[in-house]
Image (cartoon, rainbow, N blue to C red; front, side):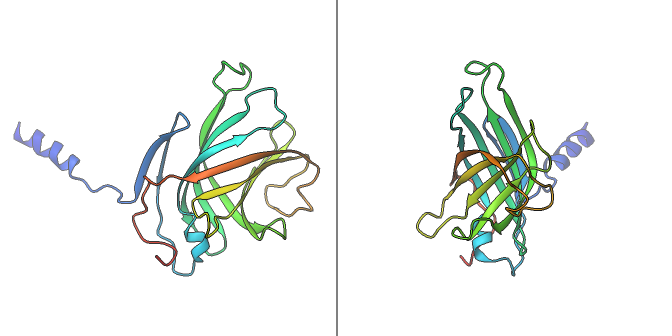
Length: 196
């Protein structure tokens, strides 16, 4: 009997990932583990690390007008890539019986200049079309005056690419919807970032 209790105690005392996080947002469970950025990662990218939550506001839609989204950016690279756990929840079946979509995905994003007047932006791009459209989120990086906000748009185009983000490939925009994400303060990074 003693050996059973010692095995249970040993399991309980096993080390766990110090940087592991878990939350339930948008009615969806999300899990991730923060990765400490390399010293050559610019501060503006390091400051993207964290948990962001908000919504897409659909314009001109007769279906659901908002989609809950949350993004845990848990790794950033010097080349501008970020790795995230992304969750979404669209509709509840009451307002729009035909529009219910929810889930979670690990999603690489890239910082790039799409609109020259905006500078670097964070781009989450689809790797395949959905219902005949290519979708991508294009978000402005946080500013010094508003360091806890990511905002931009969800763009739908008739043409796109799984490997090329350039405006010459992503053409014939047919939809643009507003996106606003706020940094959630209760998700703490286990290490300092951005020169802090």
